[in-house]
Amino acid sequence: MTKTRSIIRGLLAASVVGGAIVGLAAPLSGCTPVTFSFTLFGKDKKLVETVVDPEPGAAWKVCVIDVAGLIVDAPLPGLFGPGSNPVDEAVARLEKARADDSIKAVVLRINSPGGSVTGSDVLYREIRRFRELSGKPVVVSMAEVAASGGYYVALAADRIYANPTTITGSIGVIVPTINFSDGLGRIGIIARSVKSGPNKDIANSLEPMKESHYKVLQGLVDEYYAAFRSHVKERRPNVDLARFDESTDGRIMSGREAQSRGLVDELGGIREAFDGAKQLAGLKAAKMVKYRLEGAPVPRTAYAESNTEPVMEAPGANQRGNAEINLLRIDAGGLFPHAGPSPSSIYYLWMSNEP
Image 1 (cartoon, rainbow, N blue to C red):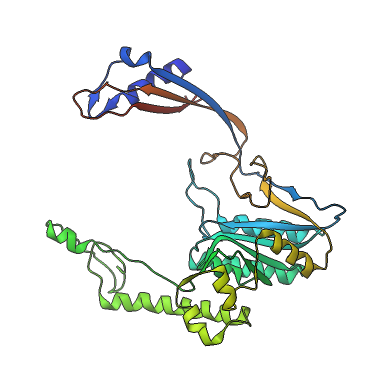
Image 2 (cartoon, one colour; image 1 turned 60 degrees about the vertical axis):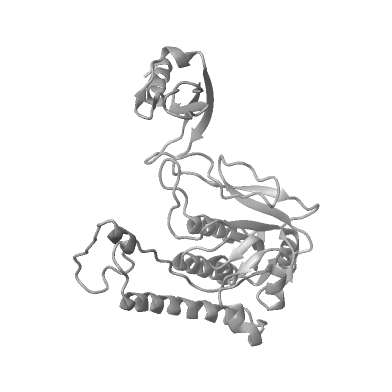
């Protein structure tokens, strides 16, 4: 389909508002087409090293790995299909750092409110595995937030740094449930499941929750919570035992408060964590490096997120190629005088190479 036909189709699609179909003649004079391009990458994306802080005379390197957003062992939603798997992204970088003899330590920069129990535990174990196989020290630098699963992952490190204003803690487990059965019943809607056993419909939001269901969920929460507390005691030998129950009751706290409770070692940001990693590795100087996906924006400093996708990836894309995106803005003011307030502009997005 030509670009002209795409524009016409876009106008037709954009002009259907509130059930009314508007002719093409009026809005054509108010159209503002904009074209921009991006590159499609397939599954062969490589990790590329970038030096973000070259210390003079440094022969060795310290790798900074970002752990940002939700920590789950599953692909996050993407624009055109499944996005990246946060655990996979972190582990791939750990493996690359382990194989590079010039990298002598790793700093994990955690900026995460938590995630799933399994995702957090898998990443925790992968960090411990990296430490055992490589012998390279691991230091955590907490950014804005490193709470719940973010703190769980931090426990795998040899040393934890937090900014005084970092939000951390939230040591605990939660299984939220929501139930619509009462509200639906008020309007005459009744749901009923046909199930193989009394607990098969646990957390079914359309039917009332039974106390037996809550007991099953509470059992899971208690099991995971006990493991979390066990890790805290094992990995934080200087934790304030007199306030241990209070510190692990799910509350959030500042980095400064966490340090006073023994949950964090030192106050400081990425620079201090970098210096701490050098100290643990026995280095006087080192280059600070990050790994980014080939084609992704180059991180300019240690604060730049290096896990960003280079492009939008279409489902099933296995090859590289160029694609052109077109954006059409239509001035819509006054087009629908009888339909109430109308938007000032309508936008239509299409690709030039679509069939």
